[in-house]
Picture 1 (cartoon, rainbow, N blue to C red):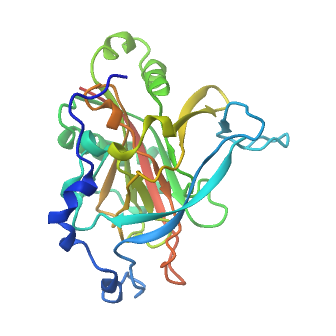
Picture 2: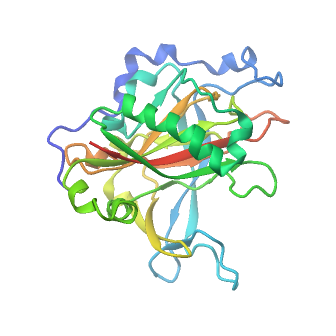
Length: 309
């Protein structure tokens, strides 16, 4: 992939003029959720799980559905690192999809109610149109959206999908192209000649988020050599995700106390080579050591979209 002619400025280099807006740690005693529990705010150091290669030297892989024959779900390990995470509150305008591969949106109206997120048909008939319109109206150049997947994650026991506490990127350049060919086979050759992106839309369902918030890395601080392709094995096909090695130059963030009317856009791939190197955002759920006892577990939904134009 070509190197961009002009390297975006990492967001942490822009913070000197806005840092004073960031909530201080002391504000957590004045800011409570609907249970009356304090919402952790401000910079925090947390343990994040990064990539540890397979001990036998084999290529890394991960099964989407746990194997029933005793094989492990993945063949690579975890390398835990203590990482400082800066709070995005007060710094929201510093981040864009083109420069950092993530952005945040506030005060997003929705007619979807909580019960709708327990029904596949209602998610697609009620929430999907909202997501499609949101992306068309907020992503510069977007002319067409295909929503191809979603995942509801819940922290409750026996949930089908729990928060993922492992640093990863949902797509690689290879799997992004495969997504276009898989979902739009008759149009793929034409669509692949123009700009296309994969963007996830993440939101809580029972905010403000207290347990297992989502951490993201500024893509402009992530080196290509720290991204490792991983076979993502579905029952009917094989895709590819990326695991992430830790590097001290990475800058990590989270958006404290995310509310239901807020959205986090995560760009997993961008075919535009002018910004493509910054077009992939490592992310992970994490355990905030300040989470108060008794806090409700996080429920969330992420919708994955092909963005054309």
